[in-house]
Amino acid sequence: MKFDDLSRYPLKLKQNRVRRPFVGGNLLDEWQGKKNSEDGNMPEEWVSSTIEARNTSYIPNEGLSRVEIYTGEIIFLRDIIASDPVSFLGEKHVAKHGDNISVLVKILDSYSRLMIQVHPDNAFAKKVFNSDFGKTEAWYIIGGRKVNGDDPYVLLGFKPGITREKWKRLFEKQDIKGMEDALHKFTVKPGDIFFVEGGVPHAVGTGCFLMEIQEPTDFTIRTEKTSPIGLPISELQMHQNAGFDKMFDCFHYNGFTREEVLGKWHITHQVVKDESGSKLSWIISPQYTTYFSIMGIETVKSFTTPRAQTFSSVVVISGKGRLLWDGGELAINQSDELFLPVGIGDINWESCGGQKLVAVRCFPPAGTAAGIT
Image 1 (cartoon, helix red, strand yellow):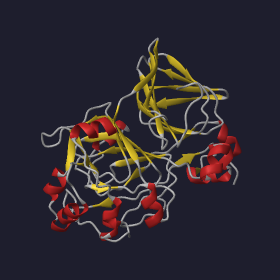
Image 2 (tube, rainbow, N blue to C red; image 1 turned 30 degrees about the vertical axis):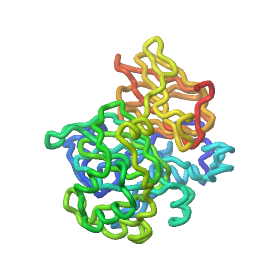
Image 3 (tube, rainbow, N blue to C red; image 1 turned 120 degrees about the horizontal axis):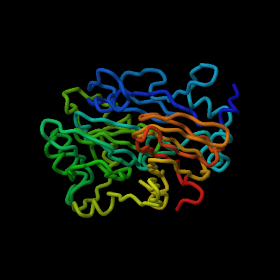
Image 4 (cartoon, one colour; image 1 turned 60 degrees about the horizontal axis):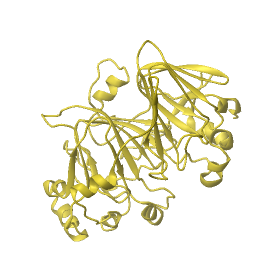
């Protein structure tokens, strides 16, 4: 099936909640405007996803983003892109990555702490999982809540002195407090940004409402045999078929002080333009990393961004408004998700109803917007 004409328009994505082995989702429900919001086992929303989730019990197509097209038919974004990758992704991207969009965006809300974990870097992913992608990621905190009196927090990076032998011994003893204490703990607030390299141990703590941008895989190595909410964790969920010994090779045993971790992986916004009620900024710039980038857009009136050199994904964080481009317009509201094909030109972001429109635009590897530095 051909979808050529769709490459000229923003594609509005259906909501795409995914099961995970932790509890959360209440703030995500509220943000998405759901009635009777509650915490449960679907605490993540996957945006512009062309990969399936890796869960113990398999549900076909879980994690794949869908689009309702003009005929009323609901089609997987993956299939739309595969019909003509160059029209949707661009020649340069397809020449390097084929029809793989090479990036995945998630919105995550944690009531319980996520398990202590690590994701593979590219070398480990290729050697052990035969994947061209690891799972380097970044977190952009957009909200949060106290849980049992504790402020939202994350765990990130080994403290000095943690060796492979010490870490494996903590795992074998299932000394959870020891594992937590081996990592640095940081209280987080809206606007905080953390970069999480493949190989670096980490865990999203309780009470975090965040956006995650990452390489497009679901490889997660976990070191807890029982989750913080008491669920038994299968061997597959722990080592992802790498085996218990090999999984410890996934960790980078480089210890850092607290100050070194913040200096290395805590990122500051880079404001590009701030004028007449509108602000454009790099949340994560393409100069910081080649894996992905995130542009922040805020306006109480209207603001135009130039044609991008590649495709992108948009999430409306708050407010409502319209997108206008050469060929049409689209009403947008809080929690809306869009896939913008490469062929779309300049975009005017217009706020409506006197509210500030806040959106983020996520780009693939080496992706950026013309005229924005």
